[in-house]
Image (cartoon, rainbow, N blue to C red):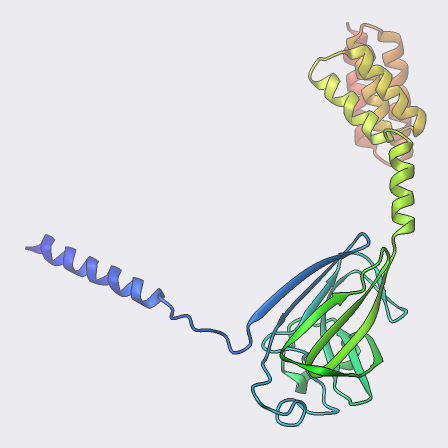
Length: 282
């Protein structure tokens, strides 16, 4: 009997827990939207909610002329740049910003805001949190858009137009991205061959896995020719010791110790000295 009562209670609790976690989903009045666009080599992401006009007069019945607006609905509209960019000629560091604006029939003001949690709580708007404020001309369209929307258009290798539209109001602003210096840096790096660290990592892998030690030695020597580092000098010494060249190994480990001390890493130098003592006993 006790077991039966316990089972009934357990099942009842399970049903209650399941029901308490259930949620009824209904369509959002201002549905969430997300877009990603690559401009040049820079990724631009915009996350926002899309209120509808619903027969209302914009910026009279809904939102107000001359008053700050979250430029969307619900949470803050967010715009992200994977690299530093220019907006309307102004430098903007890479990162994510909330986008606010002040509607105006002639010149619309747009603000990039650093606090992403403000949302529609505009009574707490703090101008010191602005990364950028600029004005662009308000364009009146012949057609109307029911739901608020963002666009990225006129995409070129180093620029694009970001715009938002609601009703007949179309607000575009210019985005510029850096392409030339990035492409040239990538070309120089690739055409210049492996880096110092590439040679070092390859040599270390060959040493640690007992592969072709002569090849490992050639690679670590190349790394040290490009730029000598105390940890690379130690690896060169270790490979020489494995190859049975004790004298060169001792000379190279001494170089590593001196470079480590000069860099302020005395512990590294002490570890080298212990390694050298073991090699002398070989």
